[in-house]
Amino acid sequence: MRKWYGGLFPILFLLFLFFLPTQRCLASVTSLTDTSNGTTVSQIAVIGSNETSVLDHGQQYEAILTNETGFRVEDVIPISINTAGTLELTILNKATRSAVPAALYSDADCTNRLADFTSYKTQYYLNTPTTYYLKIQESTIENTLTIDFKAKLISNVDLDAQFDKLYPIASDSNNPSFVHVIIPQDGILTIDYDGFYGGYVQLCDESKVPVTNLVYLNSSCDETKQTIFGVSKGSYYLKLQSNSLLCHITLHTNKIIDRSGAKKVKAATLKTNKKMNGILTTSDKSGKIDWFKIILKKNSTLKLQFTGNVNSDEFRVEITSAKLKNKITFDMSGLDYSNTIRLPYQIDQTLKKGTYYVKIIKNTSQTSGNYTVKRIH
Image (spheres, helix red, strand yellow):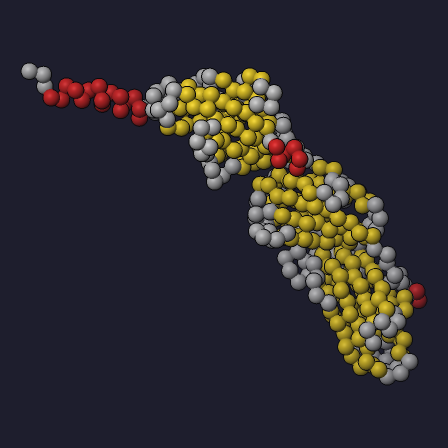
């Protein structure tokens, strides 16, 4: 009589094979096709870009993987990148359109795991342009599994930026990006930042030496953050560090004509209901003063309003006169994370007949920005 437990051996053997850890990582892929031209290829080759039109389309591949166990597919596909940057991968089961999980390794033996790609995590920053290995593991009873890949590589290279154009930027906390920009005239440089997480931006000279403090830009979530620098005509780099892996920036520039006087004897006269613009740039030395003059023909109330943008520290405002025992002072500083003032500052004070001087002073070498001063009364 055949013992009852004899029939368990085939089942136990199959279970053993299923759960046996496999050391095989480079199993063959039945086919890998570049769907843009129908060519059979040996690897996914991702070319970096910072052009939105290129990245929106991505590079698309199709892989047909053989089910060798009857229970799951486990294969490895080489994937190369030509530059450092943020790799974005979407991996889908062609039949079900569901996400196929995969792990990225630095070595062909799949021992050094770098990242997991899932439906929730599709991006990873890679610092070295080389060949990596994407390990696919998917449970299925089908003989083959067809997978669609959409790959993008947002480059982290020095970018020559144009104004009023949206750029995707690859960066992480340890690998900043540099954006080169040429300012055509004295004025302001505005940076619009859009990222899921916050980031830091710093203006540097053409040798990448910082000329401002690091400015924090809050995570956008539902809004774009902005910061503004006062700049002289010339060549600059923006240093950007973001934990978003992928963020977007847009640069704008506006010419500012400085109406202030460079010395007390050349102070520009402020007249009632008139306003004048001024600018203090990163090129100006600490302590640089813009001069304005106010003449009161009788005892009266002086009303002045200041608006503008101050980045990295403060502008100090002083009103002096032989008629004053003590000068009137206050600081124009940032009101939010970007150190950019949003609300007007106002002086409303009764003064005696006489001549008064308004000094707008650059507090530190890193401070910059623009302002408008208006005499209301």
